[in-house]
Length: 448
Image (cartoon, rainbow, N blue to C red; front, side):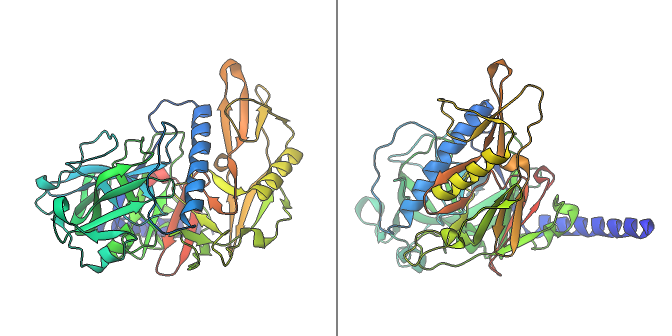
């Protein structure tokens, strides 16, 4: 029996190698870095910033479904940005590097361009269209231009007949510029830009840009269901990502067009049972996000008494559950969050940490030398169960003087439930767009 098992394991490994080889040849690979990577932040600072970003993102998503009209920019103050992961690629011939916010909640991909009239600061040089031999401005009579929420035919200083756009986000961030096409170059297997190149991809050249952009991004990469999104333009059936731990500095792989069975073997780093749940198309919602059906929550061995209707999307577009790359912590309706916290307090034999500091999470004090024991946290979806590993819902903090805390990395929100990327760490998450399915499996993301 052992001999047969070894043979099956060998065949499985060979199959994995073949799948990965096909992936490298056919799929487009990007690498993503966390917005806080390399900043030298303490664990307390990481938790505080992640919580603040998540709340800001939730407010933006909630506002975004209320109206589809143009939003005028408001005033901004320095603070924690609404940015989680930056994907790295290049635009033009020869390639000019850009780093864009990975956003599964919007579709337009854009970057700041020179000469920029009103732009935020960035570390990379702005994309210069005049230096690209493959750059072209798109005319305003194209359907892809007319389908934008706000667009017009350029006049006077813009140039007659070009597609001028304004694309706004609910946090009042806005980009205005012209719609163009050029060659995009993606990452190679060693994470360097210089892999596959794809010609004639549509993107926005932002000349007037305003918002909370303070993470060295140059723009945004849209990965939602919209027609302008990267997956839609590349005509891929699926895309996936695998986020490494946010407390580390290793890049996270992002794939466009990955074979759906890539992680069904142990090869892509997967080491568990693949779970799948339906991606639900909700036409009543203004959001271009990916909706799934959350059914309930278990803490420890107790399924909490939460009606499924709490997580359901209503006819007026409120409620619902989305999975989002741009939100750090999972957000639950306040009543659900309170039930979760009460269950943790009841089942955890640790003292609740009462602090007047910046932390807003439920935290427990950990005695010196002790290994804190906390209850399991399980999210139940339609047809799938996400039994979270401890490091995907508890955040460990070491304070000065040796004091230790363990904190629940979940936020209270409003009616929209959001599955954040902290809960997706070291999970290979596949968006199967052809079959409207979301799949996930535990993985060693740094091995993909």
